[in-house]
Length: 552
Image (cartoon, rainbow, N blue to C red; front, side, top):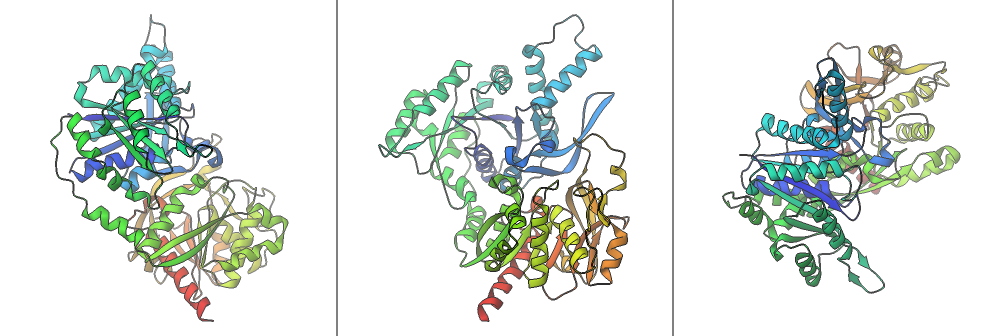
């Protein structure tokens, strides 16, 4: 029998439900149980692919492309899912399916199309039972396909949001339909610290729990998010006002190494408590491997300074997988990561501002779309090429590196991508051929896992140690082969292609320093103890560059 765990959030969004969900899953993995996760997103988008990263955070890409088929005559391709799946994959070490990301858009679209098809003839189509039934069906469908011991479902947003109400009602019904010991509800709530009285305040969390209870949902465990561990009196209040025993209220403070959270939960004995209330055998957890991973981060002696220029730097979540991949590579190289986000728009207004890059050991140019801030991004690529600073361009960052090379080395003034300038005299980056007839924007890019053929005598081949890999993609535009041929005569190397040889998947400079651009997103496959080979090679080169600077 599958044990179903539901995770909700209270007081405000952004309290770390995703990492908490992943850490709860890790507790079960420590005990040898098979764990899968679902993320529910209450927005009406079918998937997050058309959302602005500044508003919603990173769009995560899965290896699998799922055919969402609510009715026989209608289907959509989905590989773009919520950023919390990055936490799930990094903590649990499992590849997730797009089917495990349930959005209001998918649920409502399914029900409306079925109504049009005549599935509900003679009945009024309503939130209850049709929408709630579809939500429950989707959860059980994942359980049937994946067959986990534990299925954890995180509900996005905050308790009290209008958008989330159908999902919470579905969970209430779900818990009634299953045996009591087969479902658990965990509520992650924020506990603020009030400077004026120098106290943590539990009242917002109390109100959040009351809201849940008013919807017929009694949490089984409260996780209190705060800057510091929860004070004893706060734990007691949350226990008392939530109708829970003291051992069911746990603390989730800010920590330096996010991967330490499962170990912190273990110290509070929540793993054993979860097994007890779900009527599972209480097994001795195997913690040594995870402790060793955490120690990699804590014991790092060196420091590596990396600049991350981009156009979505207003919130860190825009590039969360890039940030984590850099941390993985740094820790596995014995270094702590010092990272600085750089908004590229100011670089366009003040050319001298590019001098800020002098203090860094490496530059990672980020993915993105559209024209805003791109000239500043191109300037950073030109700077890295001229100064020999280790450089890694990801997706859009790879394309902009190629544009910079075409302008500064090939002398193609005005060279650009047709995405940025449709009238460029030199369209060195242009639409993929299959994208030219596409009008819809949602789920129509080149998505998911694709084979990448790595060329001999390239830095990429050296990094991976093999001739063929599978990496994850998300793009419409690509480097034009006819211009790449010209560039190869001037010192650029095409270091990876697709199986046909027609799509350029990576480029690099034929020089002694590390200047590499990849069209794919290696960060999505990076793990805390198994960093992406590309990122690892980049960080090692950055540390070498640091030593060479210091010796001068």
